[in-house]
Length: 116
Image 1 (cartoon, rainbow, N blue to C red):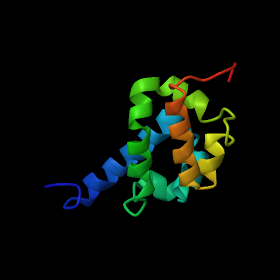
Image 2: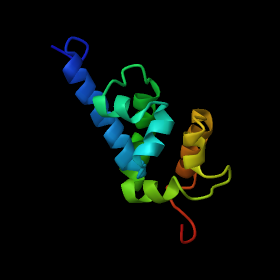
Image 3: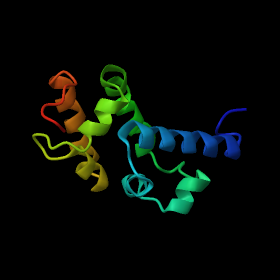
């Protein structure tokens, strides 16, 4: 029986994905809720099935996480880059701008400049 057949299993999987995104980027609960456009109760209950951006964001961050590591990603998301801070794009739910920021990070070789 898979996630689609077992609603409880599906909710736990979604909650786990949300927690992974939160951990990868060092997001607060409020920042995560704003990024996913959900209230805290929805987040805690794991009823995120309709949030298609969650698996997309995690897929987008997979390579960055493997190459740079979570510590660099946590600094990067709050550092000013050529197009502003990636966290600001997330909070605006401008996922195209966030994807561009991830690509810029990859193009620079997953390095951050300055004290961050």
